[in-house]
Image (cartoon, rainbow, N blue to C red):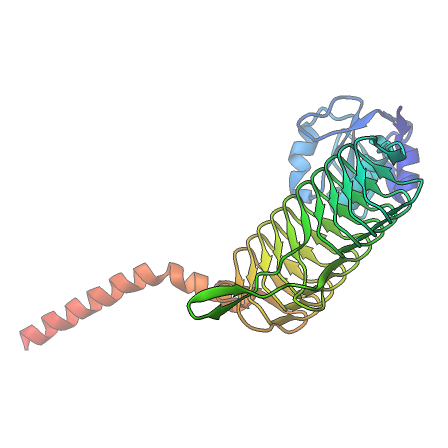
Length: 342
């Protein structure tokens, strides 16, 4: 089914430059788009590629408007516009509600009749599955867990006992919530396990990437705030508190009892040590290691992480070391010759 360009502009709150009656049959990349497709440009630097594309029309941000020879759908934020268009052109089909005959459901479980419990799912005693929640194949829900309405657990997700998943949360394949925190007491040369008897809580609209893990707390709770998004292969330690609207990118890790404020961003492969506090809006550059508290609004980088501007200056200085070494050597040799001639 197609949509006229003018209709899409009205839906997105944008404007059309060119033929508003052009019928868009699909959304595609600049390289793969055909004459009936809407290509997209998320940055002005792609204007040349956009002009050369076979796309019949283009979705562009305001800063990239004016591509010659193309009808344009101009919006303030093209990436957000793209997300909304993909929802329109590729709507998800809701799964059929009900409990698959191969599912194993313990006594005392409450499953809303609008929920979907897929093949070989296991639900432990005392757990509750909310309205329109989806548990795909081989999901394991431990005892006394809560899965909120519209939450979606993809295949092979595991919830340990007493875990809580908020409304609209999405847990991707292989993710684990509520596994043991890493706590051991050293006693007479042995590592003695400290029981982790708390729980893990994911608030509303949290997204947890594939094969990511959230450890339950020692005594209280590990908590991820509403709207936070966690990428694949991320480790969140016990008793960690993550605020609302945070982004944790792939292969990052947060050690036990650390607190992240609202809107914190950890780029890929960031490590944050334990018992620290990162204030609201902190941003940590990729491959950085944070070993001390970071005040709200700061941007840090490096190992150990320091203020981002200072890190950049250090990197520039590091790049000059070889030249400085050569110049210093030449100066030393010149001074030696001068001494010998006296």
